[in-house]
Image (cartoon, rainbow, N blue to C red; front, side, top):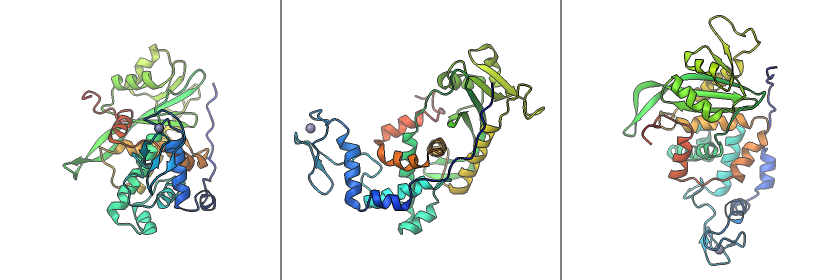
Length: 317
Ligand SMILES: [Zn+2]
């Protein structure tokens, strides 16, 4: 089996000029959000689709009399920022390859620091909610798997403690897609759980020589081992480069632009990284996905997304 050659992705994304053509004013953003959030979804009262008309400045009325605001339970809900600015923020968010700096947005929008942090957190959660956990690999596909130790701060009683501790980040890569998880421990039990849940049987799995993967030899997957102490490439020509490169990028991403990540919200940063990486061959999609699939952002949906990425409190649920 030939290993996939990875190439440099194209540079691009939705330009400022195109953005201005798409959204010339506040009303255009509002109409777009109404189309995405109300017109495509059946009315909760009568079940019919469309027929929503603007009723007040922020609400719409359905033919049956039901009223609803298009921003309800989205990232724009109860935000002080005008919709046009929030959309422009999303454009900047999607066009920056290594994530947004808080200072940049603070200067660019003239916002207070606390509001800036809140705004960027909303954009990050929007991206995080758009990343689904999918089955990877398949017949004749290679899945690269590795785990990494990441030092993070512990958040306690609303304060960042001085102490740091290690988190186990588990990464999988197949073709141009990656998936990242947080594991409670580096053990055979957990590698087995994740691989059985998210890697299709029949795939070739390339791992390092960690003993937690030994069970793969007697399983439905083909297992290729690269022992880093002895070789860079094993005798069958498999190497571990594709997934090691991801972890290098992830470290740079977290170190360079992010200073508020801690043990509790690390899943949002992992998913943001995943969101950017998985769309790098189609950079336009980053912005278009963010605005066209405006997901419901409530405590429940965020908790559900977290449980699919962060398995540390698995035993508590
Ligand atoms: Zn209705």
